[in-house]
Every structure is written in C-alpha cells, then in structure tokens.
Image 1 (cartoon, each protein chain N blue to C red):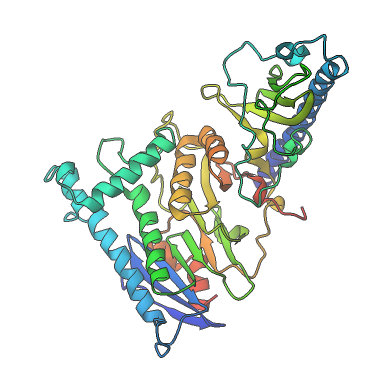
Image 2: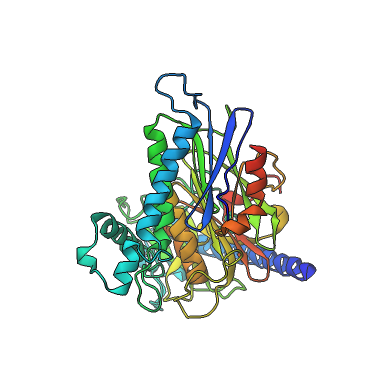
Length: 194
Length: 269
C-alpha cells in the first residue's frame, strides 16, 4: 500500500518533470518564434507574432497578471516551472511605449496536451524584448488558467520540509475532539511544556 | 469528562490547556510573561483566563450543540436573523464575504439550509484571543485550538515558532515541520482524519480528493477558511486559492500522496 503510494508519487513527480520539459520546449519554441520580429521589426506587426498569436479557442483568458506567484515572500518557483517561468524582472508589459513598432504585449501560445493537463505558455514582450515567460495550466473548471509557478505540485514525503525538527511546539491537524486530544502529539508537547 | 488542564514549564515557556467548542485549546506564553509581580505584565493565569473567556463567549453564542445558543434559536426559527445580535450578524457577514471570495465553495449554510457559522467561529475566536493577548502586552505566545494555530513573537529568543503538521495516516507522526517566520503567523488543517466528514462537499457532491489540507499564511481566519474550501472544492479550489492568496498548502490525497506549494519543499531535498 505504502509502496504503491510512493510509486504513484514518483510517477507524479516524473509527470511534473515531463511537464517542465514540455513547457520548456514550448517556451523555447515561443522564444525562437518571438525573436524573429526582433531581427526584422518592420516586417511583422505586433499582434501576429508568429505561432504565438493569441489562441482563438477563447476558452481561457490568455493574460495572467505578472504577479501571480501567490506564495509568500518565502516562496520560490517550483521545480516544475523553473525551466520555463524563469523569474524575470517585474514586467509592466502592455504599458510600455513601443517607439520603433517593436512588438509589445502579452502573447499566448497554443495549448499543448501534457500528463499534467493542457498547458499554455504566455510570453510578455516589451518593445521587442521578452520580459516574462509564464506557464499556464488550464484547469478544467470553466477554463480559468493559473500560473504553474504558483501551484501545489506532487512531491515525495522525503521532499517536504523536515518532520524531524525537535523544535516543534505546536501541531496542526484536522480538528481533534476532546477525547482525540488526549492521545495527540499536541497533548504530549503540552505536557512536556515544549 | 473532566476539563483537561495542564500547566508545564520548560525553558520559560508555559503551556496551558482548556476545553472549549468540543476540543482543546493549548496556550503557550513565553518571553515577557511575568509572575504577577512586575507591573503591567499579567501572570500566565490571567492571560489564560482572558483567552478562555473569549472562547467561552463565542461558544455560547455560536454552538449548534447548545440548544440555548443564539444560533440554535435562529436555526429553529425562534428568532429571525434580522433580530439577531450585532455580533452574530457581523460573523454572518464575514462568512458571506468568504463565500464570495471563494466563488461559493465556502458557505455558511448547510446542505439542509441551516445557518452554520462554525466554519469561521473558531478562527474568529482565535483571532480575538490573539488581540486580547496583545492587549495584555504579551508578545510571545501561541494559541492552538483543536489543531488550528496562531502565533506571535518568537518561540524563544532567536528561534521562530515551528509548527508540525500531523500525518493523517498515523496521528502520532508528523508529515512536516514548518517554521512560521513573520509575517507568516497562522496554520490551519482541515480534513476527515479526526471528526469524520465534517465538511460538506457541495461542489460536485462527491467525496473530497483530499484527506487532509493544511494552509499556512498570514492570519488565522484566512488559512482556516481556505483549508475548508480546498477540502470541499478539490483541485480547482486548491489552484484558485494558491493563485489568489499569499498562502502555502500541504495536501494529503486520499491515497496518501502529497501535493505542496514550493515554500514547503525541503531546501536540501
């Protein structure tokens, strides 16, 4: 049972890696496509920048705010997203002026099927320069998309913050009853005065 | 059952417990807690009484287990919501606000239509207990009510508060230990490990994909509501919550595997 859980978790982790790889590939493709206008800025108008044109599927909003990393200050990008969503400097994308007709705006690639669900990559360009690449997972609940870097991802028990700390003084768990408290770790900590 | 009450002290940290709301509250007071002699610093016993009073007041008004509570009288139709106390209506407003902020996944109404504010009552009581302790000029404390935790200051000088998250498969073991570094001050866990299916899974109607969900964040009401929301709303609610709110989440799926936000990953693998 336990072994099965571990193997499932491992499988899930591999899925995430696979997604990361696919997202990375997709991001690279987008970047290559989008670097073309930089080389020849006059020939390609902004809204139709190669394969990364806004998808007409219209099931999902194509723009995610630049600050969707909803984690606290301590949050780092997940391994899944780090290949694609490399943190870029704050990107006030669409507002930047484009003096030389260089593309500016946020463009979303087409959806790619992955074991983790359909994934799209959104690229923000300011004046012909990519300022941010965001991987979006399209959730199946009404098409709202979320940034993968902000998501909870499958992990192994060995990967979670260590449970071995001797400095735990409080335990969080689903609400215990008065009776349940008596046999809880919290009761032991309370008795010991930790 | 006799009221459980214990007091112990190791390294200047007092731990006190009392029963309320069908569970047990553990209060720790450290740092500036006085012995009653120092002017302006209350004794641990005074702090304990103040905290107990807060929980007792909330329990008397909001417990559906008490036939004489105000919310029980409302659920029976003895009095109308418009005749309810300002405290109850304020609490209802908080719950409705969270219903909107969670796209309706969190709701103050049971499936049978009965008004049930228990989703916010405990965390509002914890938050008020925290305000009371600050009002008593106490700066180093933790309040743990049935597994939902709010801390202030440090556990000991230079040492952040560290919260353990219980393993739902083996409640004597911990899944993780999480340092609560300011401004992160609160942890709440929801699930079916202790009290059975006490969360109504309104979305889709099926059982929750999560056996246990822990949310770590800035304030106790937010983390408690979101833990409930994620259990009830499943993966969609989890994604939406971590996208919208500054929280970390550790969730245990029904098969025992884990999902977690990046901040809960071990730095050294």
